[in-house]
Image (tube, rainbow, N blue to C red; front, side, top):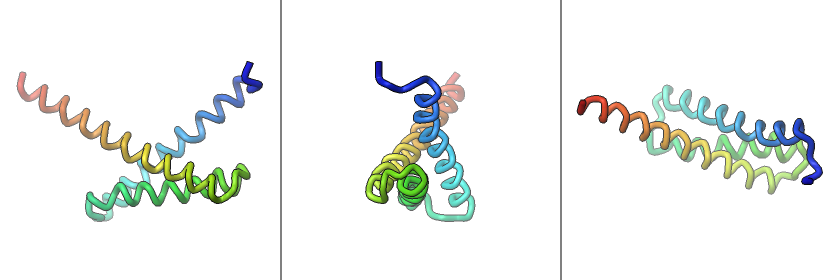
Amino acid sequence: MLGMDVDSLISYLATPAAQIGVIIGLVQIIRNLGVKTKLLPIASLLIGMICGVFVYGLVSGYGIIKGILIGVALGLASSGLFEYGKTYMESRMNSNKKK
């Protein structure tokens, strides 16, 4: 087997998923403060890097560099997930209008 029990696997997968949700929420707060839409992906990337450094670099002991890299992935994932959800909802609303 992989040498990982179910509880470890769940916590290993839940942490990034929860962080992505937090990043999306924080970016929405920044958006509501009036920041230009084109700057939101950069905000997502920076918040992801901060989360990555804090959670993975300092708390989990992966080191600062690995924390930054994981944070970049988290920021990009949260930005992409938000854009996908937004595009999906817009297409659903447009298809309902055509009916």
